[in-house]
Amino acid sequence: MTAKFILLILAGAFAVCPNVQASAFTDYGGFGKYKQSLADGGGCISGTVGTSMPGKNFNSIVYFAGSQYGEKARFNKAYFGFTTLDKKHDIDSDTLRASAFQMCLKPGNYDIIGIEARGMESTQEIRMPFTVEAGKNVYLGSLIFHSDAVKAISCGSINSQGVEIRDEFSRDTPLILGLKGAMAPEAKALDAARGQPYFYRCPK
Image (tube, rainbow, N blue to C red; front, side):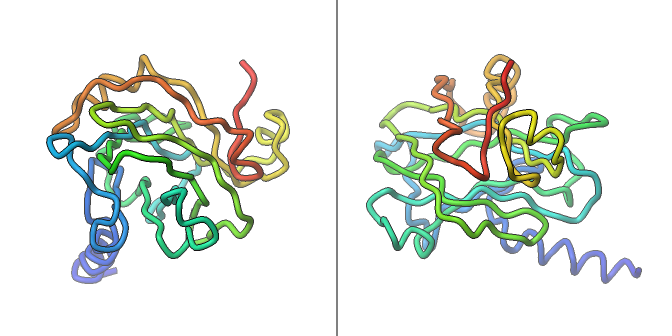
């Protein structure tokens, strides 16, 4: 594999990842549909996103949209995600790679509507809600992509390729505050039951 070919792969990957935060990336929807800074009355969402899956050169993406779009949500989606192409992960161990993200959005109600991992996108409709409040930073949790049937079943999920929602507020807060323009988050973790079959929370 030539150096030129490697550069082309990297350029292609980050062309669809316009706002890169270490190995996390975000997109605010077409023409910045949902973007609104804190200074202009917006609110933020934050957390960490990552994967336990081995390998390199793949992305893990969480899609969301404004609740008002209903059945047209998929045509109005934005996202946050994690890429293994960038080696600068905030968390890097034998079993987990993850990084912090923060997005500042227009205040209102939103739904997480799907996921994508290794180029495979979810097919069932879900609506896992969260609310953006002006002047606040809502911590959604640590969203970890797995491909582990045993783990999924032990956590009450039937989907071997899914996303575990963890409450890692104490661990993640310093990572979030290290991002440019970050503000202190408030813990309001997602309701994993609303995100089935793609999202789950494991019993402690």
